[in-house]
Structures are given as C-alpha cells and as structure tokens.
Length: 101
Image (cartoon, rainbow, N blue to C red; front, side, top):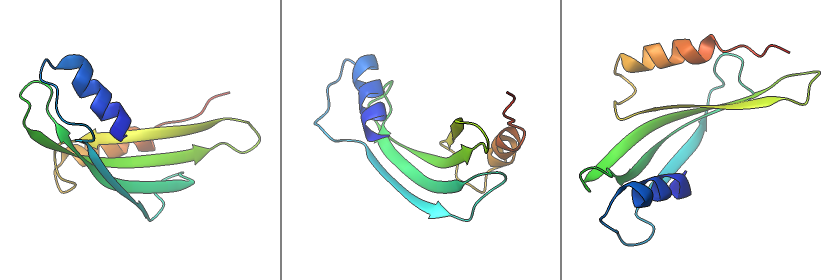
C-alpha cells in the first residue's frame, strides 16, 4: 500500500516529497461476511492536489473460493472514520460481492 500511494502522489504532483512519506498500519480483525481473513487499518500519506497530509481508513477482505483456483482481495477505502455512515454503504457493496464461475 505504501508503494501504491507513494507512486500515486509522485505521478500526479509536481511537488516531490522526501522518500517514504506514506505510512500504513494494518491489523487482523474478526472475519467479516464470507472472508477468509479481514484486516483493518490506516494509511497516512500526502494529498497529491494540495501536498497536505491525509489519512485513509481501510478494510481489506481476503476471500478464497473452494473448488476453484480463484480468490479475491477487496479494499474499502475512505477518508471518513469507521463510525461514518459511508462505511455502512461500503460494507453492503462488499457483502453483495459474489463469485460467479
């Protein structure tokens, strides 16, 4: 995640920050929905439009599909804390995700 957000900033901003300006911290949480594993955490980086610090709240869903060689990683990302209603909507999207062969 740090490489992704560092690259996103560098490719969209004329301001070049020092290296390693993005910090990501995740922890495993209680498994949600049909997940194999679920993680929650934060990403602190720079807004490529303003150069100012921004924090994203993140949930990562790891799903494996028995009888297939398929799996999915789903990311929910928002600058709004987990208590915000946007997370109810994001959780509904993830909950409705189905693998169809």
